Length: 184
Image 1 (cartoon, rainbow, N blue to C red):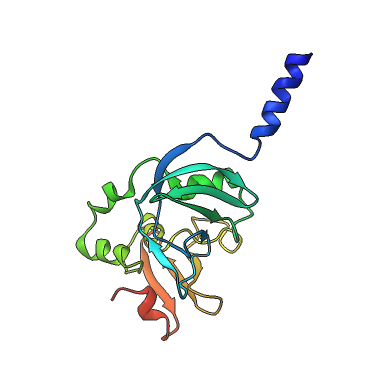
Image 2: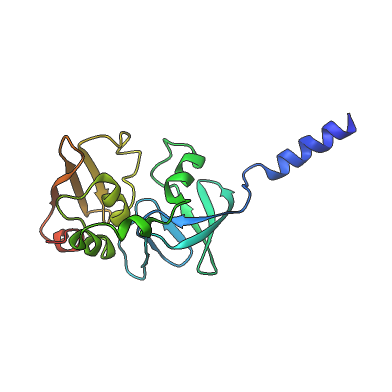
């Protein structure tokens, strides 16, 4: 009985944490130095962490995944994708295979668009994700949907529209934010 109690206490102590996991950031994400929100707003004082950046996941907190990137502790916040589990959320953003391996095989214009966190016609869903991150699941529950809705800021909405083959055919954005999200 005592051994059973010790095992239960050990399990409770580790709840909400995960074994240290090495991986790569799936996509271009913006940080304020400590917090990376899944909405991926462009904002004053934020810098971009490029897709393929090596990281280590150290566990979970309330609606966040604890990581170390370039020697700095950061949290990836599940701010707008709470319709998916935190583990599924973590698997989206922390990938085992370096995305740069695939990026280097893409046409030059796609590589350049991804490198500047912008979209261009002809991208696949995977390439859109690498460029601007995942669309938040609370507004985009189906990743097979023809339209993905993103936000550059609380007033800066843009949409990625795909054809039946999953290729980006149109990017809808107001004139003031279009240069910030579209590589033309």
